[in-house]
Amino acid sequence: MAFFHNRDVNLVTLHSAIAAAAMGSGGAFWSVYMLKAGVSVPSVLLVLAATFLSRLAMRGALLPFAIRIGLRRSLIVGTLLMAASFPFVAEVHGIGPAIYILVCVTAFADTVYWPSYHAYYATIGDEDHRGQQLGLREAISALLGVVAPIAGGWVLVTYGPRVTFAVTALIMAAGVLPLLWTPDIPVKKSAPGAFLYALKRSAIFVGDGINAAGYFMTWQIALFLTLDQSYLAYGGALAIASLVGAVSGLALGRLIDSGKGSRAVWLAIGLISFVIVLRASSLHSPALAVIANAMGSLVGCIYIPTIGTPIYNRAKRSPCVMRFNLIAEGGWDVGSSLGLSIAAGLVWLGVPPTRVVFISLAGIAIVFVALRNYYAEHANERIDAGLTEPQDGVKI
Image (cartoon, rainbow, N blue to C red; front, top):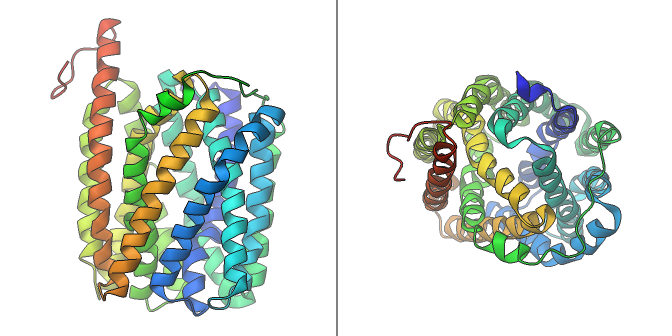
């Protein structure tokens, strides 16, 4: 397994696993806790939209900061900021000052962490093994996801939100430790054409943001409501989902790396479209909702390597990997905030949150076109190099 030989990727994968444990134990309850705290469903969706729009406004300040301290230190700072943001969730009790502070703090932490993480991962990863490295990352995260949400739900019920989100903060902060042994990577002071290069490839991020607004964020709320707002039942549903998807990404990552990415696109987009319809059809059916949620984990282990491979490879090939990810995250923020605003409006008009998940189909259509274009180009490169035969259905 050649993709194991990259020590730096292994260390960042360990960091990702620790972060996934934090996201699964406390982060997964971020939105649903606000519902319990007296915030309405449309307001929760608008809080999320405001957080992403705030990230968009703050992001310009990250570039000079990253140029000064480098990608590794920027990622370390972002990890600690993410950890520090979690305790603010426990202070929310309806619409009030605490929720506005939470939006600002979370947006600031996200602004530093996510572009730094993606830029760093893109740089240290191997293009020839990108699919398998991403598949391994998602499989490990899924395995941790079996335990984390059950533990998070139990702690939330037993000890309350302050303890829960404080423990989440400590877990997230521990994610710094593997990064202490990884190399620093400087950010170019000048990179002509970097922003234009990224902007030309930004449609996929907007589409994925719209998809996430319905398929992930609105669905979390819909699932929680369907399960009678039970933290333990919700955590159990997330654990079942992680168990189903724990090993799926490895096989698909190999498919991508062997030059069959076009087939992976059809599989990933076909499956996620099916699950979107299944989730939107699970109204008033807890059993169907749990099944639809479990299938989402399987889809994630397929979808993320499929979409992540072109994103990380294009970032690495770009004039500046950090500038590429600043545009990428900006496009995702535009898509997700747009999707969440539409979702909030639909719920306010009386559409059940479960049905609102249908909006993800619009985002998936955009992602499908972008992925097909990339893997067609990727197939050309491999064919010209004599590494593979033309793929079925790919127009060369």
